[in-house]
Length: 251
Image (cartoon, rainbow, N blue to C red):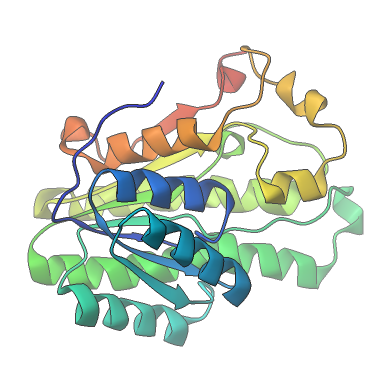
């Protein structure tokens, strides 16, 4: 089921939107009438996503961006404001993971890369986004956390650690800005067959068994949750972690 939202005249940023959950969010916001800025670390993925979104009639700005680099992030925000004049909604989705491996085998460089994108990237993006939103007097931020922000996944310690941290960062910063009309929430998806997941896990059916519903989620289902948190339907929600996980954390 697809929910109906109206984001006409809204400017929306989605990081890591060259594919997977980020691209599904970009499609959903474009369909709802938003002006969108999307980023990705891959020029090829970015160009393909921008072309596909423009084919739907959406107004799109594509930006090659490394979310873990402060200069890149600040330049991204400057480009968005220069093009659209403001930033109403930000979806901090860019993320990465290591191959599944036991904790003692994880290399320092692998750990640093995951934390750099998944945690530092969200931290940097939120700082730049909030500076702009304070100037405007309002804004909405949705961070991409995970079902593993509340749970465990053996052999994925860097990823799980980063997503626990994103949950804590989301809740803490949401309280800081709650009285200034900047609402900050996170979505916690269960297992979805995105390109990242497919590249790391051989048997996707094993992932489905972690859910009470006993199937994988779809990118569109996660995008619906993101749009709810970005919309006025969630006007009394800030610092929340919305589970879209097929009942994983209820088991």
